[in-house]
Length: 337
Ligand code: PEP
Ligand code: MN
Image 1 (cartoon, protein in one colour):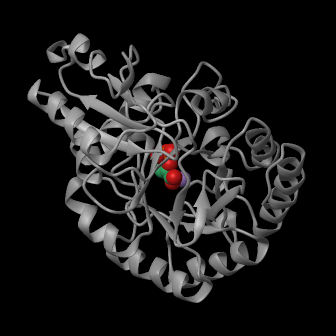
Image 2: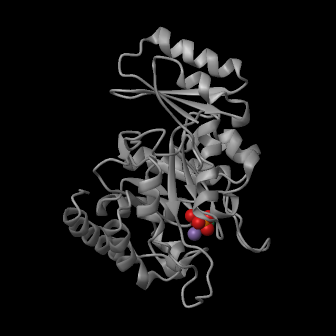
């Protein structure tokens, strides 16, 4: 349930309505906009006596939410959330590009790739130090050593770091080095992890699960916001379908749908979405045309030698082509790079 207060509501009015909701046994979440104050009532809605709230003079309207998510909804917050990552703003007019290798493999590999993506115009550096691999016999990541290399790359290039966290036990360690903690597709419904990420003061990049519906995706984001952390960036990375030509099917439908339903930014990962480097450039352009706020792209100084995901990874030269393509399409849709 969302309770919108009248424009003239004072701080005392807000406290009074908040107390009334809490007396009914629900939790509250207050959002003060430029004109209206909005209170989200969270918990068991059956306990909410809607009539009593409607009767309060200072209440403009009470909006029952049929959708299962609340805090992430456009009804709760009309204006776009703009998330600031070390000065890089995600969700505003500017398109944000995150680029880097699938995995951190060595100091040289990471630093060289970081320099190349920075030179080509990337805004953040990605690289996995903890890798969610299908086979237990595949490379599992450099762990803390990899995180230290990411830090070194940030120091040299100034690019904020995006890296994956797979487990509640890793949160503290990863948060020590990362600017953005990535929740991978396979962990989109790792609820203890989402709850823990709701309690930290870091941006979370939440990737869509392999078979997640739009509602399930948004409910996972809701977990993080319900814990108190509003800094969530969504990421479409392709879903499983019958099509086997590509690794996944990049569901660009979800981009304008997410923009309509939520205030959170959404970026697209065409690398995992296609699994093929030759499709990454056109699908990057298509993502921006569909309204995405940015991209996450795998780039390696030499994709043929990449330990993971080489077949979907761009050379620095091809990454420059992505940036040029995105620049033109961004201008065409009233955005900038
Ligand atoms: C990744 O970004 O390297 C990754 C493993 O992504 P996903 O969780 O989308 O498969
Ligand atoms: Mn990868």
